[in-house]
Structure formats: C-alpha cells, structure tokens
Length: 68
Length: 68
DNA sequence: ATGTGACTTGTAGTCCGTA
DNA sequence: GTACGGACTACAAGTCACA
Image (tube, rainbow over all chains, first blue to last red; front, side, top):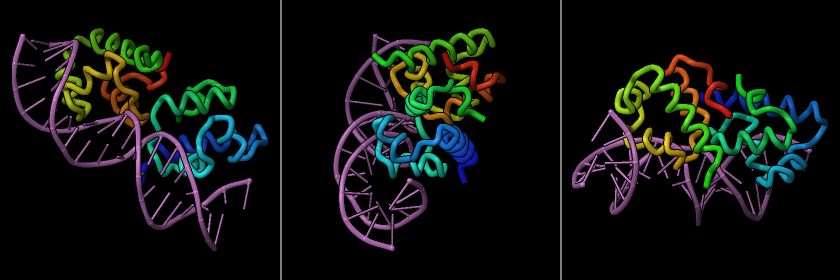
C-alpha cells in the first residue's frame, strides 16, 4: 500500500540486522516501543523525519542511508 | 525549539524561492494546505517522510537535498 | 524475538479566517 | 503573498496483551 514506508522499513531492517541487534534492543536505544519499531520496519506506518533521524542516529548512519 | 524542523523548513523555502514560486503555488502543486506549508517553512511542524518526498518531487529535487 | 489487535493520546494536516 | 490563529479531522506515536 504505502510503497515509500515499506522501502524505508526494509532499509532500517537491513541496517539493523547488519549491526546484529534485535528489534527489542534497537527500540530500547531509540526509546520507542518494540512493537512500534516492528510496524515501522514492515512499512505499516508513515514516520516523521524526526523519528527517521533518531533511528539513523542510533544505527550510527546517515539519515540519507535510510531513504530510497 | 525544533531545530531539525527549522532547518528543513529553511531548505524548502530556499529551494522554493530559487524556483521563483509562491507558497500558494507550491502548496497547490503538492496538494497540501497553503497555511500548512507556511508552518512547515517556519519549522513549526514535524513533517512525515511522505510529505517530504512530495515536496521534493514537486520542487524537482532529491529528498536528500531537503535534509541538513 | 517478532507479529498483530485493540486501544489512547498527541500532533500532523485541513479549512476557515484576519492582518 | 505571507504570517498567524482557531477549530476542527486524520493519522502518527506510544502502550499492552497475547500468539
């Protein structure tokens, strides 16, 4: 349905798994709920740029790396 | 207050004025409300990535050009 | 460890206006 | 043509229980 959100979600998941950390751990570091992070990765929600930056920062990557 | 939103707003305004189009016109093309685009440029709201992409597309630039 | 449903709350985003 | 406000509506943000 929401193509963009799905792509961003996959990029987040890709970067997270490369860092070998779980959703639970990343969610804790980002100070968001584990279940909500899961929804983001599945592209079920259309996140704000602020959230995108927070996640990128936690993953220690540039926010642009999370954009298609 | 919201540093990120302010920076993004200024980048949008910069690109818009370079294209010599008004807020009103850009808002119309992006299919968003005129008053809301004003708030975005003033950094008063934290937009979603979808909106960011729509604005970038309308300005015919890469979304990354709107990120600090 | 992750997916999902069923929520509540906050804010993104709209629509009307005024100066 | 832009800034700013009030009063909405839609949906992102955040929580919890259970599979």
